[in-house]
Image (tube, rainbow, N blue to C red; front, side, top):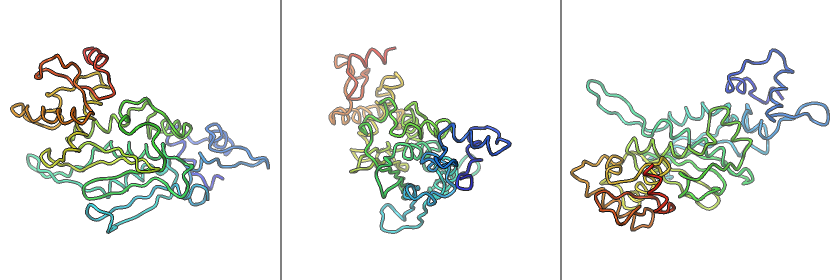
Length: 323
């Protein structure tokens, strides 16, 4: 059993010293239900222990298809594969290596500083690990023959996990946390790989806005959940659906942080100059017409109006943002 599990990684992630003897190791692993005593008197590895700390997932027949697949394509389609690799380790002991491998495949941009060129990542540094961790934790393990997948294109990264989302994709930002796999989520939180506070998607949206990237896309293809991050694209190159999605997620993020969405906040989000305030007004009007954003108080003049996501009532929203 100790040959199958990367048990030193368990103690490293918890920042605890490795016990001096085998009994101490077994006791610690059993306390977190990574192993349990068998009827024959020995020890068995639980599914939780294997999925988190297996040295090789394919050593566990029931979990071998739950390894993470990482695929890199040439261009923006799936017609030509450059690289494909399937992770071999458990999610916890292999997470740092997985993120390092993904980051090594992601395109980067070179920007000119005051004196030297520097390479900057295409996506926010915190966004990719957050979405990958979400995919691992919230997958449906009862969906057989399929596991989490990360697909890298020239202009985006798509992270897919098996299983329908527990909440509507439009409510990912504001909905309180719900874990399909509570024991897995709890341990991943203790290992500081993920959060259970439900703020992971909020952080992703915030980072995307900070980098002034197109808004992330959360979608629900039949039987799966997918998150998509897009490379930088100027506002002038975004289509109407992308502009509306960005306005909506901006309104969601502002609402959950008790701030008003306004013409000024949207200008800051897109980097629009104050003299072009009418452009931000047009974007907000598009989102209102699409039914995703509503005016908090229609009686207020257009220059000082604030906006809410569609699921927030105008009365409640105007009170809360005022606080």
